[in-house]
View: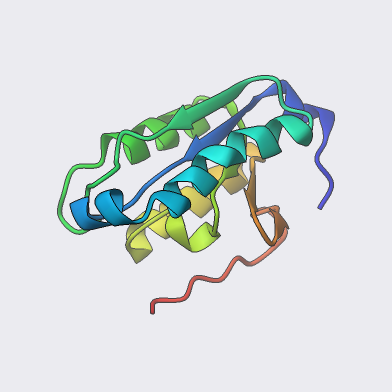
Length: 131
């Protein structure tokens, strides 16, 4: 997948999450790698980079996640050219959220970027492992 000038004209959004207080206390490396995605976005050409970390320590099951809602709103408003995560599977905690995110990105032409690649939801199927 090629990053286009249209993607770069919109923002890169880094969605950071760790589901539990224990992960926050004991898994600093994961959080450091997630925040490091802002530098990857800049290296790929984005100047407008937004980090959303409102959901740190929030489980995805039955708990309000204002950061995820903020991400979805920005996508729907057409402000997002790319969503970054360490692994695409970390973007959502359940099937409904996952499919909503992929559908919205596809509708506005936003790409999804993780450590393994750049995905275009309009033309690619992005799998999710429910492990």
